[in-house]
Amino acid sequence: MGMVFSGLDCTPRRRERLPEIEVPTLVVHGRRDPFFPVGNGEAIAREIPGARLLVLEKAATAIPEAAIDEVIEAMLTLG
Image (cartoon, rainbow, N blue to C red; front, top):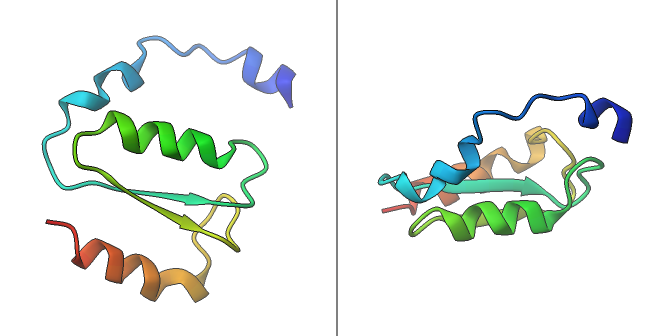
């Protein structure tokens, strides 16, 4: 997997612009994501002013249908 990601061109670095986001933001991250650990979602949420992190314990890289209501509820409480 490292070979796949090492070949990616990550310029420009969009992540550096996260502090510029000025809208309510929900960062959703799956605890079982095989590519990016939860710490990645935590870091993204920290960099966006006022962002909220929702960790889906049983999810990997996609939001499972069983978690849709949880995500919707979290989105509705942003403000």
